[in-house]
Length: 578
Image (cartoon, rainbow, N blue to C red; front, side, top):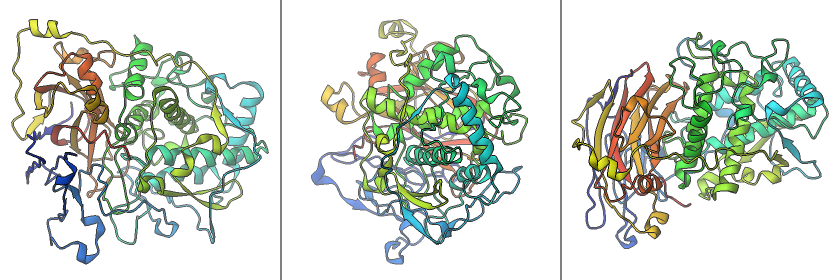
């Protein structure tokens, strides 16, 4: 079991503002914690605070990253929430800022930066191009499979210094995920595409250019990248097209125990192979992370801006995707290469098909479940650099990829068997009341979680109206500090009355899992948030009239200490509609 230290803060609203400050020199990487309230607007004010504990007059020194403009109070530099008044700018990738990646111990040193270009062109939407249709990988056969294998073979044959080469394409993920790109001339922070809202648009663009390059190499403009359909029973094992050792699609660094017909476990806890009930459990896991998510911040992740500091919270889409990385990578490698570490995952062709399905789920969330894209200017204008099929360096923005039809690709219409797989409560309100009550209190701080631990988190509002719930998603927020180069997983249960070790995503009380995949170790970037929307969950558990949320944390794996500096209920962090 991992060693986890918990620090919880519970705030009580004042007349118009609640600000709770916790200081723990021994354990906390969040020296100041703020909870923001939207009402009433006339009471909003702007404050500022030095994030490094130094000179308070930071703005005059021009160091924007050390400044956080707070909505209704002070904020901690390491624990960012959406803030419309923050001094920030959209992330702009600069090829001249690319340097050596920050790799975990045991990784072979590699240069991840792409070749320098003399010119950078702005992206222009393709015209007069056929629509590319991405199919499930398990349905790719015959000529389609032959073309795919040949395209990868040709990509592997290109010189390593060719920006279209297999090596350079794999290194894109290394550069963007391991601190190669600086946001400006001062470090840190670096450009990050995980644990924030850049996750979805960055990877959509990554696949777009990768797909275009492959099509160009085989001179087929209709070529479409398959998707690993792990949310359907027929696609829940590693697709057979990736298992032929003679094929260009094969990668030797995969988990030998997870080869077909073993089904992927989207809630994998690293306790061997257990195929019993995996289909239903996977349905429930996808439902919780896609269909069950209403607030855009909970789906995409928290904001990340050039002036805003380190990345903060992964969205449910990213959290869902993480386990496939760890499950597929080789556990005999110290860093789980290839898929199990972000610097190496692009070396496995299955990585791109995995992300093709993640991208598809973004589309499904919008088309089937009413999801809405973000419209914050800093999000829309965030930009990335990619080489196209003609070896031209192109600048793209998040805004340009929101309508995939303009990029001339779509997904084959296949069944979505999990769309009605809403988990059911293990106990109802009457059954919970009949059980001998176990009073839960806030944890004594600091709390070392080396075993399953339960505590209560105070709610500020209860029995809200439908209109209030629609406007403000209630969420549980955990502020986590940990070594991001290590894999970590812990589960969160609410109002659970049975044996916590028996809870699975098929239970409604199973609120979610915090999952980290090894990426850049950085002493100045050791924090993240885990945010879980619980409005519908509380309704389903008949618990909306409760004063507290009963929380049980179940550590699953993690080889280093993990500190949860705060645990609290918020009504803003899932809810921003920007």
